[in-house]
Image (tube, rainbow, N blue to C red):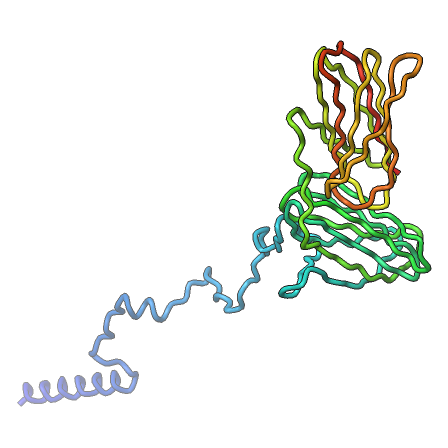
Length: 299
């Protein structure tokens, strides 16, 4: 009898313990172990900041710069289909420059003219090889400056406009490439010396020695129509003859004169056309050697 009472008490105590456990939220079911996938999805590393979706602008590279035949700063002159001329307008402040670039082929004639009612617009033309030509002011009511360039080589030609004398000047500039090809005259056998004038100069001089017997020396001068070309040559041992030939084949043959220290020969002419003028000095057969000097003046 006592044993039954003890068993009943133990069952009652066990029931009480179970009830207390249920009321406290404890169960005998164990929490599932965390899987690697769950960890990866639930944990965000504090060291990694969210990636911005805003694109970062790229710095332009040198390759993105415009490149028109090697001239970047100049405005490209474009001719409409079938046309050989184009006219553009602009305004220049004192000391400011405007650059234009256009392509031309060897033998063509490039004509550039600026017109302004405010002040003369200076013109300087640069060839790919560095040779340059300056425009000339024309006698007219408006300010007109003209540059004519017998194109020596194919490539891009840089045209620089400037106005140093006015606070501001509006202008029109016309570019024309003559369809008529201007070719240098074919020189006779012998060396040919191309005559270049200094940027601010109008005279050039050459000298040399022609050995005994027949001799020939040739010079090529590039100039615009309307310029005055003067060519003078002197020799000490024997007289020389001179021929000046224009781009179209016209010739001038001056007379030789005797002076106290030898001989002199020369010619002055107003150039009728732009292009290359061939000056030839010759010495006759069976003549002694002679020293000579030849001077070119372009005004």
